Amino acid sequence: MDIVYTIWLRNVKRYVRSKSRMLGSLGMPLFLLLVLGFGLDSVVTLPGMEQGYIGFIMPGIISMSVLFTSVFAGIQIIWDKQFGFLKETLVAPVSRLEIMLGQTFGGATTAVIQGLIILVLSLFIGLEITSIPGFAIAIMFMLLIGISFTAFGIAIASRMDDMHGFQLIMNFVIFPIFGLSGALFPIDSLPSWARSLTLLDPLTYGVEGIRYGLLGTSQVDPAVSFMVLSGFTVFMVFVGSYLFRKISI
Amino acid sequence: MYAITVEDLVKKFGDFTAVNNLSFNIESGEVFGLLGPNGAGKTTTISMLSTMLKPTSGNASVNGFDIRTNEDDVRKSIGIVFQDQSLDEELTAYENMDFHGRLYRIPKNVRQKKIIELLELVELDDKKDNLVKTYSGGMRRRLEIARGLLHEPKVLFLDEPTLGLDPQTRNHLWDYIEKLNKEKGITIILTTHYMEEADKLCHRVAIVDRGQIIALDTSEKLKNDIGGDVITIVSQQKDDLYSIIRSLSEIKSIEVHDNFITIGLQNAEKHVAKIVTMASENGITIESLSIHKPTLEDVFLHFTGRTIREEEASTKDKMRMMMKGRR
Image (cartoon, rainbow over all chains, first blue to last red; front, side):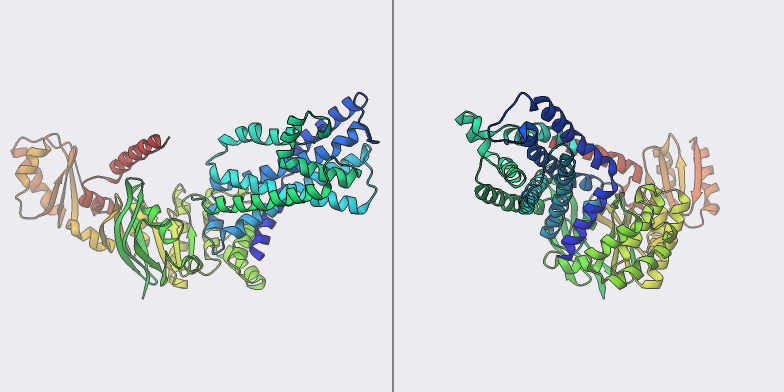
């Protein structure tokens, strides 16, 4: 456990230290939140949504922020590989599973912090937290998204030699995962074929879970969301640690 | 007691054999050098001994532990400074050390004390809270050596420890390495392609070429093998010159290379005039001539028939072709 903590600590230290990265990765979600939120707020009316469209997408934007930060945190081990630091970790008398878990929890922690920053900023533009348990539920879902997608990033990074493939992953994997989730639109209003597509996207359950926690309404039963997302998290941690074990330098 | 034993170690990458039937033993407390051109298989050997790479076949043990079956104990017994930098630049020197100490499960109070001690040893204690990215190349190298010593390894691997450093820093590092070996009795195995480095630091030197050891002894003995001094003669008519002087009884060894001849013999000063006279009597023009004490470079040339530079050029080509083939 102390090894997992050591690696976690390094990740968090690096995160806290790089203010530019922290601010930089807030830019896109905030931009979307403001532009889409205020831009479409008056045109889009959602039945049963008191907070309007901007209230509807806040949980979506929070999960976007968690998603991007965590995938990036996972993929970062490519930098460690290129800059040689990974060797230092791999040659130590510790198991690869410990290293991978430390990296995963470190990435998830930074991702949740990024999500919380968006959440706090959302409070200034109309989000109201009405129940403490609901808030806790939202954080739990953020943590699950963080863990599963950091592990996802590690799995990808274990198979990549350098950062050249990063754009490819961003454009063809991460953006579709975000776009297909119910982050920006209510999945109930989709035609049934598109709806089943969104239900294949693990992030949908994260978004719905956070939405349930923060707004009290969701289109997927929160218990189902929790089970699917937990299952996905366990699966990704397995895949991630399996592929990470086979990494060679 | 041997610190390291290596028996018929082989490593193949596809059909390229990087390490070919390597066998040697290293005594406890010895400074052992693996000398050879880039691509000779030195780093691959170190990688196998440090459990980073699985050997294709053969056996080896470090500090008495088998590198195949007892990885964890091997890892606890060794410290390693890699050829490429392996520090986290976003952390301070102290934090890099601390990270390492935690990975090797050194208890907190011991860890804190040892980190300061070692940073003092490598004279970085006053800069311990600076981020590593502000460090110069030499400082980084020293920090890496300090880090490699933190968990008190029995064996320290130094893979090209002074590559890319200026001569002054290099001398400085050499002093550290000697001191470490003398004061702490750590067995040190270092790879290098600097002749001077092996000459100065190592008790014994193994000359590695194309994955094989072609000579292994103290550098004194290796140099004596050539036979005293070395005369190098550059001449267009090198073959004629060769056939004339080869029968001289004083000459211990003589070799013809691309555009020069090397001659090994005792007391070269006394015999050089005779050689020059014989050359001019036969109408052979000598472009230049030099006499020097043999270096390991000469040893390498003597055993392989190539200079280290030629060898590096050709291995680089080979590597480039391999890389192309892979893509």
